Length: 167
Image 1 (tube, rainbow, N blue to C red):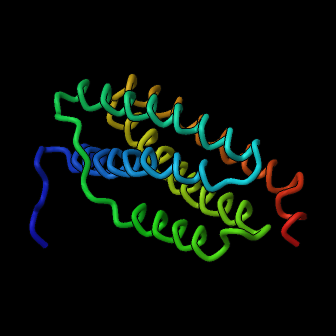
Image 2: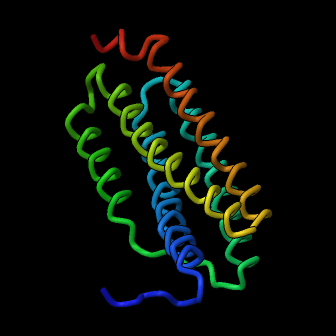
């Protein structure tokens, strides 16, 4: 296997590459959230998507700060995982538009995104600590906590009526 390392620390390279992946993902999510808000039929779900869009802008800014702190340009690399998740969300919107199952489908899609992000940010935070990137770890934890909060809100919305309405 060829050595793809760009520095003397392969974990730092892995951290940097994963940071690019999540940067790309956040940019794609930022584009998808307004469409999901527009499709949502309940005011609470629309508001959740709009609030998370605003949070996502802040999350991208934190990623910019981390790149800057590492002396690297803030740029993404294509994340096939998030593209697949977003494509699936588009299919759900097309398949369930006009039915009571649309909002639960939107919640399911959004939670798939949140779970992906929770995994990524948790991993990045752990690696940042290991690398001694304390400020990056702090910024990543801020985003991680927002993603967890959003996931819990989506669960609450689904369990307090969206799923029952579709049943």
